[in-house]
Length: 203
Image 1 (cartoon, rainbow, N blue to C red):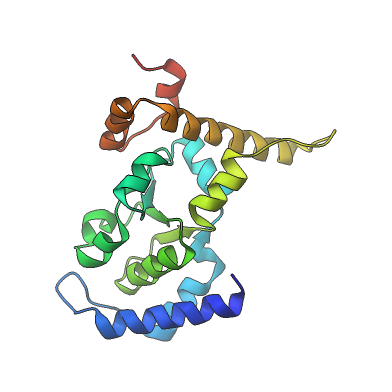
Image 2 (cartoon, rainbow, N blue to C red):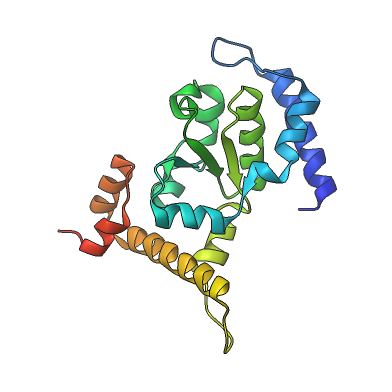
């Protein structure tokens, strides 16, 4: 998406949010709109799929992935460790349920740039500053991480480390999504998916 279109989209979304959402005890926008918009437009508001892959491989407990898609889409194709909070639930229910722990970095992703950007504006507008989006969403994750391939004759140490992180994260993704539905449901229910469990197999 071109930068100008993205900025315009965020402006429209922000205006709609402020105009249409009723203010309640758990939905009260804070700060000035122009500062909010500047914050969500900054590069620091988004994380690359490689950064997310590194969190996943490290099993970083300070990070929470939030999948904004429908439960059906989530069950079909899931990033290990992610929790499913459908977009419509995020904006209609108390977001503190999922975003209340300010020590946890929450990362939204979806199959729609507009949807995850909208969620970011909404969450940041409510004062949840430790919230980010995964740049490119699930589509970029599939392209860059899951479908990663090594090409060429030489590779630098940095490139090798990046490739290994992608490969490991891709293996975790593929293994989870290849499980029988019953076992996969157990992992999703627990909201904890460990590389160690994968390495040890499932009984």
